[in-house]
Length: 220
Image 1 (cartoon, rainbow, N blue to C red):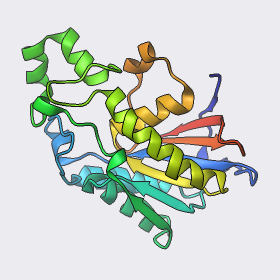
Image 2: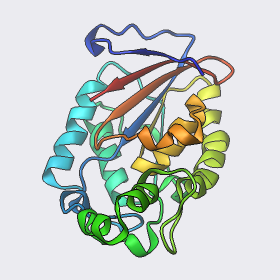
Image 3: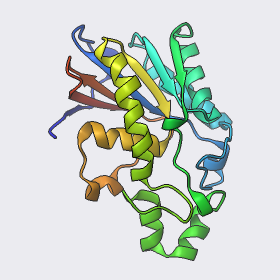
Image 4: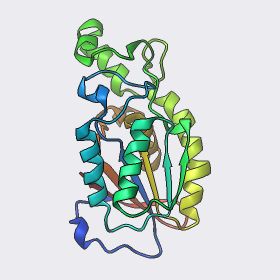
């Protein structure tokens, strides 16, 4: 899928009235991100730096009028969204919290240091566990498994808001957002290992009246 990608100065962005905007934000640095641990479903808080990343994300979204918000049932994503909504004066908008867009379950890797895991499993298997489409860690979820819960939620809840003409912000996690991005951009399975979204990073999509992406912008 050919999507026009821009790196415009956000202060000069002209928002078009006939477009709906989907804003995907990965949560700020968490306590376990700082320790380089596999987090998954463990419900940890943002670090002070993670809070600052959320504040920066808010400043980069100052030009947007937001109408709807979605986040997961984990507090690092919720805290990120709260900071963004507070700092952009959108605390009055509707917020939906749902486990379908939570981080993927890392199973037996949960709580393990990533460098130690790499030594234990070897570079090739470690990379498959972290970045592949359909290889799950023991007793955990693959990205495909995560997509199987995140995409139905996107199509039923998030896309419905977009098709109604609302600008939507989604504050979620590295893998639930990778699943949604793969779906939006129709990224082939073999290319998904190259997709990584940093903490506090923002992907902005312009969607037409049919829900098709016509433009993508990254802010960080």
